[in-house]
Image (tube, rainbow, N blue to C red):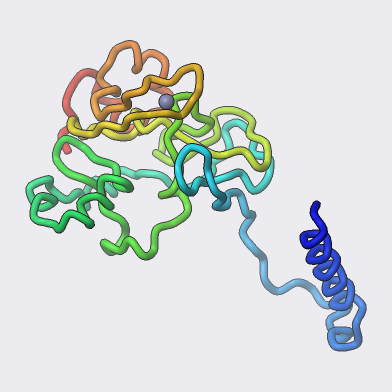
Length: 211
Ligand SMILES: [Zn+2]
């Protein structure tokens, strides 16, 4: 802890102490808590993989559901690639950066609003990830994860857009270097990843998803 961090830490500690014992809030003593906060699992931090990433805000257990993922109903909002072609280049790039694609189109954010993306939209890719998808399509820890570790999943487990290509430099020993929207079709990839893939990609081995 450097000196300025230490000062801030001491200042915050002092404030907390005064809140707990000071006269201004003494009337709260003994009252039950009214508001229950949702358990904080994830938070943003700078990432070595790319720009910003999502990190474990506490230790996470293997099998724990970490964030809402892609559900069957989300495929009903699919936007066709033909419409995508009519968008301006900035929006097209944003869609390619954030949205999961299929052969037919991409899944847009809620209300077509990129201003309101939840933290889970920012998970980076890794070829040796610590998240996968459960049977409902939600992001789930596939190993025990320590607080402070970056949370990643394999984009090959979610994207089936045949044009999708990510040049990967995740740096892990399992790096495939090229991650594509066709990885899910590969028999070797399926054998090792099927339990982590989006349910829709698990169900239709070797065939093009209908949407
Ligand atoms: Zn990689």
